[in-house]
Length: 193
Image (cartoon, rainbow, N blue to C red):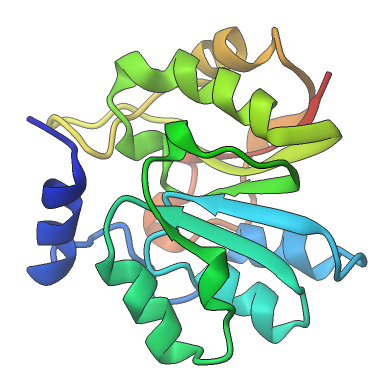
């Protein structure tokens, strides 16, 4: 299976987006609600319909960027939020992105990547973050019966990828996941070394 632009575009075109909550994820909303710096430069990679970006924008955050392989979810975000800066919506390959951010939010991007790219993901995140920048979000703490995406994983596995590049501030079971994901998600905050 090729998880390329055409694959993801077809998922949006055919409305086969089971990962899409239709709203900001409660654990990420709670995290965003405690952020004070409205000028913080934030990236949401593989952002999809990006309800987190929408929420940040509506809360007055000025430097929110979204990158996705597919054009459709970026278009959807702009349709819902015509004032979102078009120049902050990037259609492209996350692994080719050249920029720096103070915060990167993870929401269903990591689990959509082929597992053999997980090490590359950790390295790229460290490259994209400023010194002491944070990578925060959710990771699945379960294995799935059918082949992904999404692809599952475990806390121990994630530590092998991220520990070389990040201080692990939090990596714990999410207390406020949506009901279908209760007990199957880890909330994390990693700080770049």
